[in-house]
Structures are given as C-alpha cells and as structure tokens.
Image 1: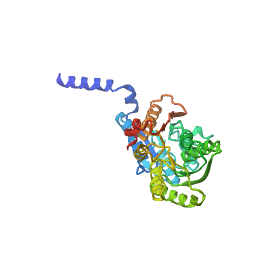
Image 2: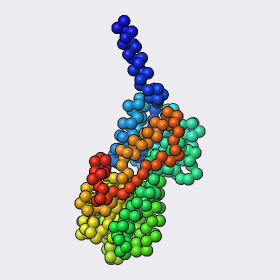
Image 3: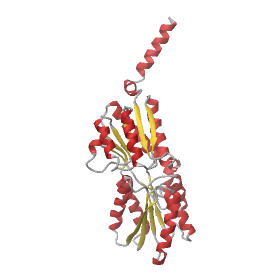
Image 4: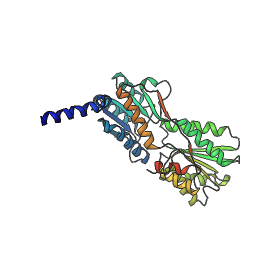
Amino acid sequence: MRVFSILAVFATALAVASPTQAQVQGKRVALLTSPIQNPYVGAMNAAFIKVLEPQGIKVTNLTTPYDAAIQSQQVDDAIGQKFDIISIQVTNHIAIIPALERAAKAKVPVVLMIAPLAPGNERLYVSVAGNDQSELGRIAASQIIKALGGKPAKVALIEGTTTQNIVQLRTAAFKQAVAKVPTIQLVAVEAANWRTDLSENVARQLFVRFAPQGGLQGIYAMADNMAFGVIQAAEAAGLAPGKNLVVVSSTCQKEGIQNIRSGKQFSAVDQVPTREGEHAARVVLKVLKGEPVKKAEILPARAVDKSNVEQYAQACSF
C-alpha cells in the first residue's frame, strides 16, 4: 500500500506541474550573444537563463567577440544540433542574414534580443524583444538638449560597435533630434566598442582636437561605462563634467548611477539588462509553448537623472 501511495503522490505532482511546463520540459535554446565579459551582456544572459531553466529548458550560451563570422557559424551549429529555438543578440545585422535564412529554411524559430534586423527581413524572426533602440537615441538627445538649455554648443557622439544595428539606430535617432536644434553642432562621431578605456582615449583626443575651437560642451557616450571613461578624460583635461561639460548615456549601469548622483553625468536611460534578459526569455517561453507573440515586443524606456536615480540604483548596479 505504501508503494502505491508514493506512486499516487508522484503522479499527482506531475499533474500539478502544469501541462504548459511539461510541454516545454527538455526543450533546448541556443542563446547567442556578444561576450559575457561585457557587464551588461553578462547580467542580461544570467537573467535570461534564470527564467527558462526552472521550466526544464536547457539553455546553451555561445558568445562571440563581435565577430560576425563566428556568430554565423554558431547559428549553423544550432541548426545542425536541432535546437528548438535560437535567441540571438545580433553582432552584425547584415552579415547574419544568410545564417538566419538557413535557420528559417530549417524551420528553427528565431527571437532577436535588443534590436531588429533591417526592414524587409521580418520573415527571418518570430519576434524582437527589448527596448526601442531609436527611442534610446532620442532620449539621449532630448536630455543633452535639455541640459544645454539653448546655449551654443559643440557636441560629440561616442558610439559602441558600429557594425551593430543597435548602434546605428541610436546614432541615427540622436543625429535627427539634435539636427533640429540650431544652437547645437554635432562635430564628431567616434567609435569605442563599448569599452571604458577606449572611450577615455577617444574623449581625450577629442578634447585636444577641439580645444582651439572653444572645446566641447556635450558628449553622448552610448553606455554608462563609456560615459565614465569620458568623465575621467574630461577631469584629466581640467574640465568639470556637470559644470562646463554635459555627459549623457543610454544604458543603465552602476557607473552611471554614481556619476548621476555626483552631478558629473546628466542622465542615462533605464535599459536594465536583467529586465531585458527576463523579457526576452518570456518571449522565448511563449514561442516554445505555441502562444502568440508580437513581431516587436518592446519595453518602455525613460530617462534616468537626478530626479529619479534612486529608483534605479539597485537594478542598475550589476
């Protein structure tokens, strides 16, 4: 009788373990991203995995050092190994197209993380989950415009990795917004590959370059760690960020929280990696369950500045 009781309890537990969970148990997800050594990507991927693995889903995370050829090979490997779905943060939205064509032909669904492909390629993915990258660029522009307050200003933009669609979308939106303000001149656009040290070096060179022209009054660095590098370079050049230099960003990291608190950085944007990872994972889960998803599952975005920085301090300190 005792054996039958144990079996009955076990059977009941399986029944209670939700039909939808049983439906996805054993499914395999290929998570393809840039390096987890990037704090943002590391936090995003960890949050993604944390949502799916308790559902009995196996997540295999493969990364690339922003090398499009490696990522294309990873897509092919995922197809060959018959993964149930690919979730990908695309390194190069043009170079990845042939690999995604092969995934579509093999009927392996794809969920894009963070940013879409170029228009016309919507058939290659089920959904894109993340922030509207153009909106992040517009928010950064509106914040630098607000901080400059109508004063004549030379502004520079320091980008992430230029082959990435997220960078191109943010840059285009930022340029369009500041072009409408006659008092602002966008005098330089340079790349720093999301790195703090490169951002510091680029900023140092820009300060020297524009010193004979009255200097720079504003810099948009695409990530908080990059803005931190800019601030270090500015202080080394004898400038006072927050006083005679406006620095804005469009991510949400601990460096940004610290610098917004101190007044050295005017603003960031609430692109929180854990929220983005969890959001993408929930979209993947829906796809695996056969539930409908939107073509663009967009997270809302808002500026983070001194007025609301404490609301984001914990989420952004990763």
